[in-house]
Length: 201
Image 1 (tube, one colour):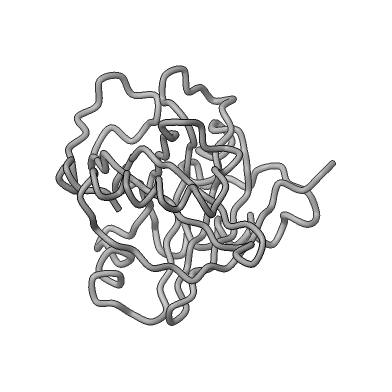
Image 2 (tube, one colour):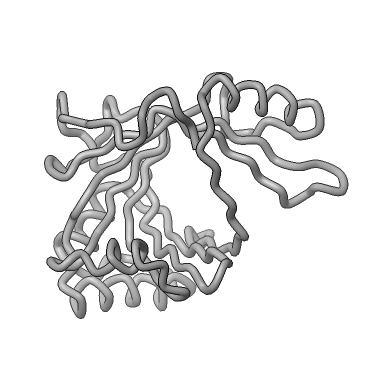
């Protein structure tokens, strides 16, 4: 069976721009970059459930700008309508070392991801995935992690070509979230804009 584990490093820069300007930037970049194969016209939904300690340790580490910090999340790509225990999601550890972002994740059915992160149970995995799954479980148990916030946005993605292979540009709009009702399939959740809707990242 092919491993569902994926790891990569990125150097990230983020900018806040008006939505109209972001569209102009996208159109200019599209002349030299390709649309990401997973990014349809108009973009796709990205939803993340973040875990944190009761004291919000991960949040405060980000606010304080620690050079080494990490976070645990479950991420779903696409529309939330029809999300079920069989829907694919990524359980991801994202950490920052100085200015480099490192991501390691495993793709699991949503029900299995919840069994691991909420139920604190070891879930089926391959030999290659073993260390990562055990690290996730150890992190959850040792720090008493629990669901803390859900964020969502609409993303358009472009990837570099030729000399710019490896370059990735994303434009995220309608950035919103909530601090309750942590199931992706919750009907009519109370999402609030966390960045004004006239701005994009």
